[in-house]
Length: 208
Image (tube, rainbow, N blue to C red; front, side, top):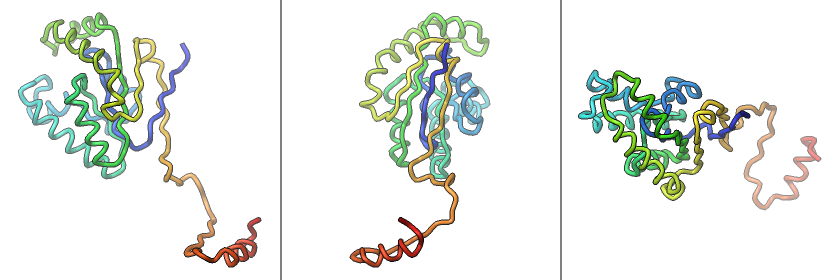
């Protein structure tokens, strides 16, 4: 299978969207720096010492988005690793992007429900039943067509294990990122109404 190229801006909020067991965390580890990925499970552990403690979900996400905001203020790509199958959860991602004047990107792992159930049944740290996966998968399928209206600028849907395993993430520089351009430069300011003078100056500088 050929590589699937996914282009994302070098500064953005990336929401990984998928049911539990769809491989979001594995995908994140394969394509992003550990410091770029903010996992809801990690933040549950951070605030309560227990990764699966659903009672601290609110506190965990408050902390997660506090850190996300700090990263984006520093111009750092930020990836939200959570199920994000509910519209209310995704709204926080979009709101964060708007607050920091950057794009919200959705990478959807639309992995078959059967695969997600099999993976979760093998995880000893997960004690919820198949009905949870069924509900999340249904929420995911209902969500895909509305992602653009919700405010996601770029949407990438991976519909199989093979597609998820053959992704290449390409980071696109922002339009104002000119770090790869080296000088010397000639900087000319305040040229309003001075066309003749500007033309003479450009000729003197050696431009044609």
